Length: 342
Image (cartoon, one colour):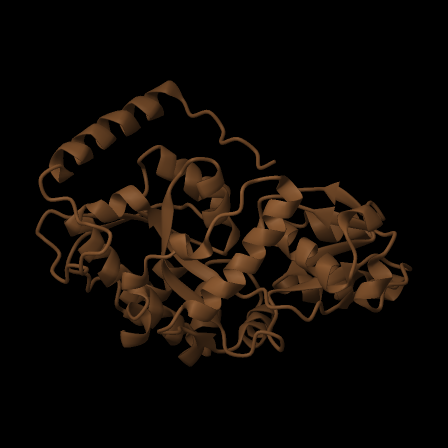
């Protein structure tokens, strides 16, 4: 079962309750219906609190960060658990995540909506993750996963990927040993090198570094052959009832899409400004990540994305015992043409 949200400090809860009361009072008379057209003008006095550090850097480098028609307060928040906690506290308007957080938020009583979606033009050639294989472990195909110890992070994209990989291989969780480990930092590569696990999904520059550091000892990686490329903006459903916030979110979703294209079209500036200056990586690592990511896909029709999201939901529901939900209910389709139109 998904972990229950962590308890928040009393002061933070009080702040959230007061903010919620104030917001509810302002929306009572003019709440935006879920099927009403999105407002296109942001009223004066509107502000967004945004948890999207990557886009902040991209908008700064492109010069667009000062062009919004409303002020933005940038929160150094990323990932599903942090974002959902901030939503519950009323401390965040929008966050950038993969496909799993919206599912788990809904299962834990936090209604949310996806308002922007991005993928990769050639997702099989540009996977987000590869399966790291511990030194000396004979895994060359997905069928070889049978009987292996596999790192597993429930509630995160890497955990869902493992469940999909097992299904693709015709295996179940009973055919392997899932070892629950957090997927943060170098936990997975170190667990592989230390033989704590036989297989673990590793992403980004960790793929390159893992084989460079432990390849001489027999460490390898294999590709899983599945799509693992969703990237979304999501918000509390309640936030979209505020016409002013909805208009501001529409404007932000358009800027998010433009930032995604700018990153792809300006690789040298992105490597220097983000990977090297902001993340402290080498230019070589930055180039590796640019090549790994490839061109973004910002579809104006989300039907295929919704269908893939439903497959993920069904796999997770079967594994966790949660009631299946409809993927289409997670998406606010009023926003689906915003990114492409931007």
